[in-house]
Amino acid sequence: MGRTGAEPVQRNQPPVEVETSKRSVEPPSPQAGKVVRTFGGAGDRINVGDPLIVFEVPGPPGRRT
Image 1 (tube, one colour):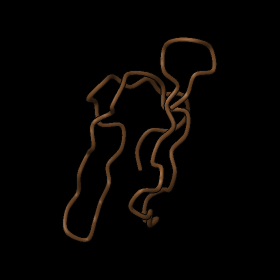
Image 2 (image 1 turned 180 degrees about the vertical axis):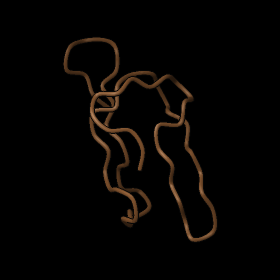
Image 3 (image 1 turned 30 degrees about the horizontal axis):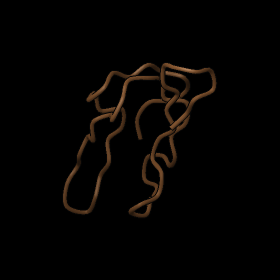
Protein backbone atom coordinates (compact mmCIF):
# COMPACT_ATOMS: atom_id res chain seq x y z
CA MET A 1 0.00 0.00 0.00
CA GLY A 2 2.74 2.48 0.80
CA ARG A 3 4.41 3.90 3.88
CA THR A 4 4.32 2.33 7.28
CA GLY A 5 5.06 3.55 10.78
CA ALA A 6 5.59 7.22 11.58
CA GLU A 7 7.16 8.19 8.27
CA PRO A 8 7.27 11.88 7.31
CA VAL A 9 5.45 13.01 4.18
CA GLN A 10 5.34 16.43 2.51
CA ARG A 11 2.22 18.13 1.19
CA ASN A 12 1.40 16.85 -2.33
CA GLN A 13 3.83 13.91 -1.96
CA PRO A 14 2.08 10.61 -2.75
CA PRO A 15 2.24 8.50 0.43
CA VAL A 16 0.45 5.49 -1.10
CA GLU A 17 -0.32 3.85 -4.42
CA VAL A 18 -3.91 2.85 -5.09
CA GLU A 19 -4.71 0.34 -7.81
CA THR A 20 -8.14 -0.12 -9.37
CA SER A 21 -9.23 -2.59 -12.01
CA LYS A 22 -8.46 0.06 -14.64
CA ARG A 23 -5.43 2.00 -13.40
CA SER A 24 -2.91 2.81 -10.68
CA VAL A 25 -2.84 6.22 -9.02
CA GLU A 26 -0.70 7.88 -6.39
CA PRO A 27 -2.98 10.40 -4.66
CA PRO A 28 -1.11 13.39 -3.22
CA SER A 29 -0.99 14.00 0.50
CA PRO A 30 -3.38 16.82 1.49
CA GLN A 31 -0.91 18.03 4.14
CA ALA A 32 2.59 17.61 5.53
CA GLY A 33 3.04 15.41 8.57
CA LYS A 34 3.72 11.84 9.57
CA VAL A 35 1.87 8.78 8.36
CA VAL A 36 0.91 6.98 11.58
CA ARG A 37 -1.44 4.38 10.11
CA THR A 38 -2.43 3.01 6.74
CA PHE A 39 -5.49 0.87 6.09
CA GLY A 40 -5.24 -2.18 3.88
CA GLY A 41 -2.25 -3.80 2.29
CA ALA A 42 -1.13 -5.12 -1.06
CA GLY A 43 -4.01 -6.96 -2.67
CA ASP A 44 -6.64 -5.80 -0.16
CA ARG A 45 -9.89 -4.28 -1.36
CA ILE A 46 -10.89 -0.97 0.18
CA ASN A 47 -14.32 0.52 -0.46
CA VAL A 48 -14.75 4.00 -1.89
CA GLY A 49 -15.07 6.41 1.02
CA ASP A 50 -13.17 4.22 3.50
CA PRO A 51 -10.07 5.78 5.14
CA LEU A 52 -6.66 5.12 3.61
CA ILE A 53 -4.26 6.98 5.90
CA VAL A 54 -4.07 8.64 9.32
CA PHE A 55 -1.67 11.60 9.52
CA GLU A 56 -0.13 13.29 12.52
CA VAL A 57 0.29 16.92 11.53
CA PRO A 58 2.36 19.76 13.04
CA GLY A 59 0.48 21.76 15.62
CA PRO A 60 -1.00 21.04 19.03
CA PRO A 61 0.16 17.70 20.50
CA GLY A 62 -1.92 14.70 19.49
CA ARG A 63 -3.66 16.43 16.57
CA ARG A 64 -4.52 13.86 13.91
CA THR A 65 -6.58 13.96 10.74
